[in-house]
Image (cartoon, rainbow, N blue to C red; front, side, top):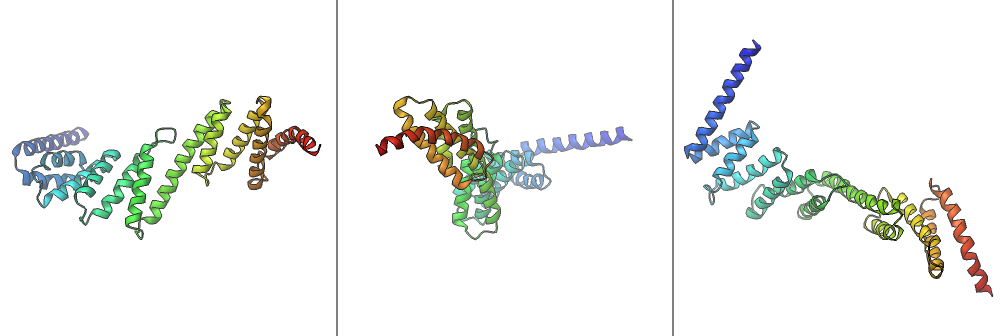
Length: 268
């Protein structure tokens, strides 16, 4: 019985392939257009896409051209070729700015790039592009029903960008490249003030400045100890109960001890 069912399936597949090949060679573009939509509705996005690609130039300037462009973009999306789909949706928006599908396709540009966004450790060009695309959508459709969901996507992507910068800064810190770490950590705080990694970033920034002061030449020690002290004040104001507090208090004691001598000098 199983062999018979397998045989029937093979016959169906072969018949389908034969039908598809005949259609592609037929030159009957109206039939190909109709069949491509059938393939799409059945979920056979690869064949649908192949036919739409083959006939799109034939229907340029006709009423079917817009429909073909719309289906081509969704074929790519449904095959999870997200960056290509985003490009096709972008072409659609550019070519058919008065289309009834405009809002949907403008949204899909951002959504496809959001889906194509890679892990945080990788290049985030696509993520930044998705953020810009969604911001453009919201600027045109500020009252869209998709607004709440888009804002969730935006938060997730900004968190990913924040995490990538945090990882880069932490890498400098762990390698004891404190000068580079300071620059990178300060940029993190500037670019992502609400980052979930803010506490650790501020802790590493204090530590980096502290280590720079400790290992500095004498001429720069005063300035650098003062800079570390400032970071200590900022941190404790925000996170007085931090898990890093004990270590930072001890190091601040060293800073105060060093700076105390200059207080004596000032009094004299």
